[in-house]
Amino acid sequence: MKYRTLGRTGIEVSPYGLGTLMFASQMGNDPDESVKIMHKAIDAGINLIDTADRYADSEDIVGRALKGRRDEVVLATKVGLPMGEGPNQKGASRRWITKAVENSLRRLGTDHLDVYQLQRPDPDTDLEETLSVLTDLVRAGKVRAIGSSTTPASMIVQAQWTAERAGLQRFRTEQPPYSILNRGIEREVLPLAQEYGMGVMVWGPFGQGLLTGRVRKGGENDLKRAQFSRHLSDERRIDVVERLVPLAKEAGLPLTHLAMAFTIAHPGVTAALLGPRTMDHLDDLLAGAGVELSEDLLDRIDEIVPPGTDVTPLDQEYRPPALLEAALRRRPAGHRSAA
Image 1: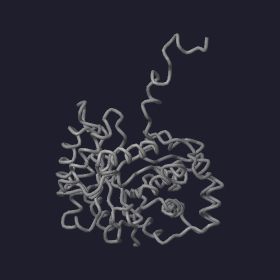
Image 2 (image 1 turned 180 degrees about the horizontal axis):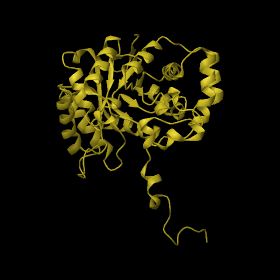
Image 3 (image 1 turned 30 degrees about the horizontal axis):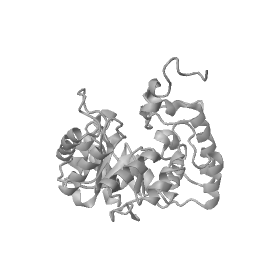
Image 4 (image 1 turned 135 degrees about the horizontal axis):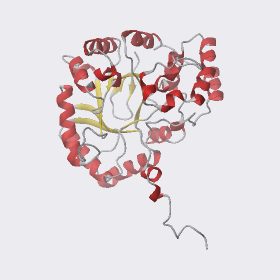
């Protein structure tokens, strides 16, 4: 396994990272089998493991797997999405992050996190407040580097400026969605990350399952996530998959290998997070670790999905208040006309 520097942190990570959402027991996985999968991934040279407090009992299972092996991995987790019914059990306030980080450390069985990420922007908390508490965690030795996730380009710039102006730690990483089906981050997010020296760990390289080849036009959709993710049954996305399947076959590659090789070919991408549910899934992905796509093949992918475009938006993308709240995009009645 080759290694890449995570932005300008000096931390070396494998181009394949291990996402652990699917290891949560509520996804139907046996915890003992999940531990074995993680051990095999580490033995194969994958040293980046990413989880989140929101992933049910995923942090607990990761903690079990890392007993005696903590120093072999770069451990990343996330904070911010709701963790209970209480109004203060979410977000990016000092109050919540101070508590949430201790909970994650306990579940993971470690005294420090290599990367601590804000899972989504929090428009209700002043950005300087968030960066201030994250800076305190770095200075206390509980966190090595801080990062953001699924963040619009404008907010990445705002966070960098805020950190510089206030003398605070800045986001060193970004974790956006990226796949052949969703290339929107190529337009601004990836160039910005390169400019600011941020490491980029992309999620969803298989289009949340569509780029595994398991969903075909007119066929059954047995993906677990299809029950709650509309984009997994979107005909426009499935039509694109139908054009990619013969392209991969012509290149002599499984569609999964084509999808992973595409994501890590971009110079702004440090690592792509794969999320195997079974040992067979992991074995298949590891078999494609040496795949390198030719210029011609990358050009042909560009013809199917143009650079910088999304086939359709993802359900999990960040939607700012200006899009969610009608009052923020409509003048009061009586003030909407020109006369």
